Image (cartoon, rainbow, N blue to C red; front, side):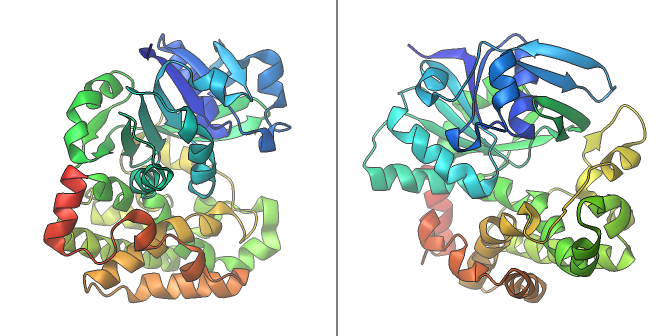
Length: 365
């Protein structure tokens, strides 16, 4: 029996801890699961069966959850919503673990979308799994947050408007009302709109590549927004954004709008649609990292973000010279062929589709 007030949060990082605590405080029955590979980092939460949340006003909350567990069966059984908060590079690993346990009536939501719904649908098809499961994604997490200590998460800013889409589009109406009771979601045209509007691939890789020398030198003392975002970096971010926006226009989806002056802030456009208790720019500036060029700012946002964008752009004749350069330089820096390792259009079920076929596929599945 599926209970839509029961939530399984899959992922024990900062986003997972924040979501588990937040939804538990809103009255949901929350279970949080972490992959056994990361059990040491999750040990405090397992022991306490609670999350220490420091909210945006710096108020501390000890929030009990129904269950913190390494047993995914225990987490998923009967849950109406499966909230996958794992980074994109681990999301498939998490989904594959959940896949054979999926139940009719469940909704899987990936926070944030990196072409995740399309990828999950492909994995279900390849596994021959026929379940009445809704696949959804939001364009970002509901907050900017970091783990301050094991089992302790701090929220710096919160997002005021979240794009939500399902694959196929026809399933959105049946879930958006329930999710809107949790977070300020609004419908996106389709899952390409949510994935293209995820700002991490737009902002992080170009800024990391252009700051590679400083990151190598500063290590744990590097702060992307406070220290790394200068006028030169912001010009790179704006150039990538313009190429993503051109791709979005070519495939018929809408990009969130950003005032021109926001590109020249220390937080760039990452804080435009967020709020903070006070000093939003200062709170974003406190977000530390990356401490290495092998951080998720490249290892996730290139292969799961910019690479599928570049592949899709080529299919529809949209030039992306800056994105291509960032992928090439990131590959050189980390001695990894991200074009080869990244998501292909075959992975997403989009290869060879015309625009008309693409729109129909996103609408109908």
